[in-house]
Length: 428
Image (cartoon, rainbow, N blue to C red; front, side, top):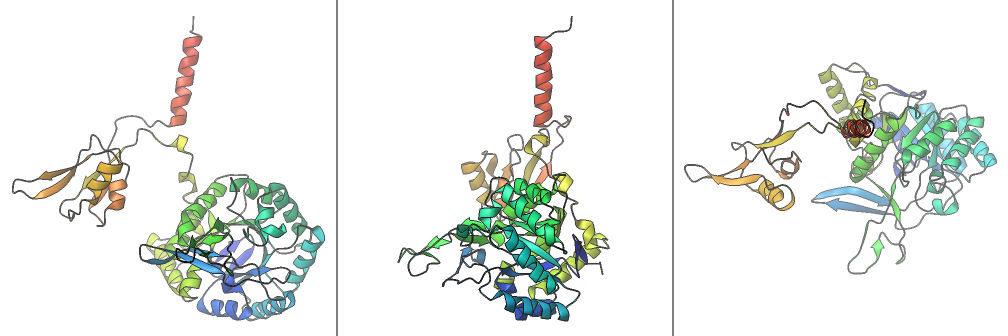
């Protein structure tokens, strides 16, 4: 079996699966149950001043029969006293010394407040700190969470304040509710962050009840935007991790989160630059035992690839991720329909005819049987037909040699610029 141990900025854990700071890590009882189930680490639910939470708090978005495709919440940080949390952190770390316990922290943007809480949590033996600069609701209205995380100067300054006194690694958790997350990631690094984690939840409204016209969820008939997470946000989060991982200036480890539901998701995050992953919604949906399948699946994947350590995955796909202008304009694929597998549902024909490039023909063979065929000369390789096809293996996207040298948009523009320069200033 492969070695699943990770080291994220000096924080070690027996596997890359951590519980994110959220309801599943609200108490010592829960975190200890999680460690017993097999989780490698846990980011304790955000500590700060005692909070009064509202009722109700959660909502979910289901799609096409899948429950909890997206999850929305308006819950705030821990509503349990700091001293109670500190006592339980100490007890949990003493019982599970080899598992990672990271304290998520959020206080007012004041130097003395950060110094005070950092010293208190480090005294009870945490392995690291995660600064919550991402909470999009409730706390942001008080000048904390995303209100700080959306201002690069505040991210840098508060990270610096924490690093002034911190003895354990400092992770900065970033908000996705910003134009460019790489800007705040770089600010965290400038402030001395040992790692960054992303993404926190996305501003959202789960829905509106068509009978009562109340928002979902609502509190006594009134609603507010919440934080969106779950499988639906994974593509957004994966992109943000990749964008940060490919920038040399953001040269710190990344803890990736956002829709991680299985071992496959974890592998994708690690290939795109994450050193480990954090999970919340999947655990809330299915319970702590899901980590058993995650561990087994990851082990089997690594063994099948002949990889001895999970850390060998980190960043392997980052060089493959670039800007659109660096893509080969002469690369070409076309769709091929395998008639022996096709069930003639005609979804590909409808999709192509109505919304793409009208290159799938409905034909009949010599016996009068209908079949579908792609006119390859008109196919642009958009993938739509293979996406809507309900049968695996019925449509393949096949590379067609163009006979031309690779040419990117950037190279093309550069060549055109040089040509224009030569026409303007001909060599005499």
